[in-house]
Image 1 (cartoon, rainbow, N blue to C red):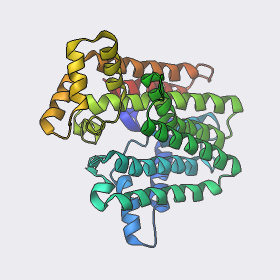
Image 2 (image 1 turned 120 degrees about the vertical axis):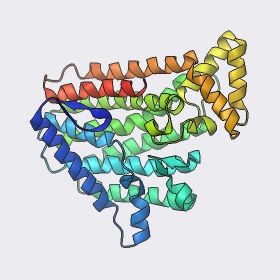
Image 3 (image 1 turned 45 degrees about the horizontal axis):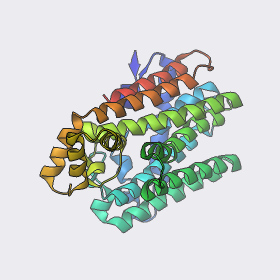
Length: 336
């Protein structure tokens, strides 16, 4: 059994491993090429997070989805570069909005160069992704545009918060579907579509990506509370400190509102206080790590991952399908 891709994903076939490794290497080269500028400083800023590494989760899905058609088709690697460039661009913007200090184990771009440079670098990456898309045809441009609209809508909904009377958990899951699920869905769709797979396969892998993307983000929510910085590549409790509602916190608030247990209400009050204080922040993390709300968020992660796995049922058996199924397990494993 060999290993390829993020999370130590096992691939049981040497030919598939070779295809995926070759594809991901081509994507890496494509990312560096796409982020070169005649201005050296722009190149440095644009390649900052690329060189910091990353899981390349979305390109991996593109490569595996392409196995259901011709994995060597000319549009496969460029489409994987597009989705990763788009994802990287959102990270530059997210770190500004979240005032994050660390990303992928290095200083975030906004910490290193300031907010304006970070935002403009994200815009530069979006522009380069659009340039590559233009060569993939109008259908690819339309698909990416729709996904980008969903992504931005999800970000706006997160910033605005749920409307009056809306369940905050349901609102949050809608946010994740837009912010994360949309681009992972495009990864499955592009991989299958660019490889010439049947339309039914394209639809299945799009649905798979949507659900797996949500599971992936929910696992990140759990990691933000449960992990250390070595595991997650960013400072634990970043979302917590910035008051960003993640699923464990939303579950805690729902439990506190419903049951009124004093310890839950006390923890909610702690979260609503000044978490810029390191001692208060550490106490909030400590208490959340042993709270049932965290386990409830883990169960939600498992549910979405299992829904992703279930969508794959109609696909023909084979190593590529097995690898996609194992990705579901790998995402759940991240959440503990």
